[in-house]
Image (cartoon, rainbow, N blue to C red; front, side, top):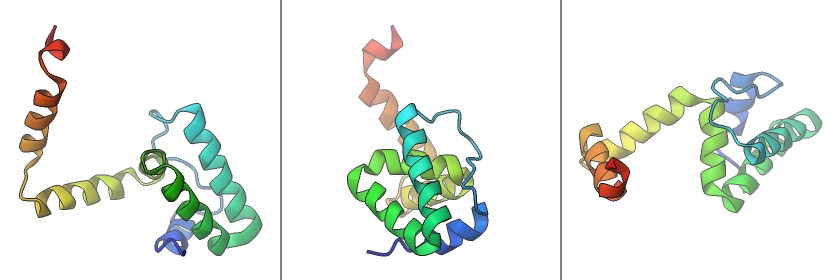
Length: 107
C-alpha cells in the first residue's frame, strides 16, 4: 500500500523529518518518528510511504500524533474540513467534549 502523501511529506520536511511541534510527543511517538526517519534515509520516499502505511495500520492514534507534530497546520486544516463536512462547528465539538468529560472533569 502506498501512502499518498509520502512524496510530498519527504519534500516538505527535507531529509530529516523534524517535528514542528513536538510538545505532545510521547517516547513511543518519538520511536515511530525515528523509524520514519530511518525509512526515508535508507529507502527514500517509497520506503517512507511504506513506513507511514505501517504506522497508520498499526496505530491510527499514534500515526495522527506523529503527523500532527510534523505538519500541525495541515492536520488542523484537515480536521476543520472534516468537522465542517459533518455539519458541525468548532463550538459544537467543544460542547461535545464538555459533555463527554462529564461533571467529574469540572470538579
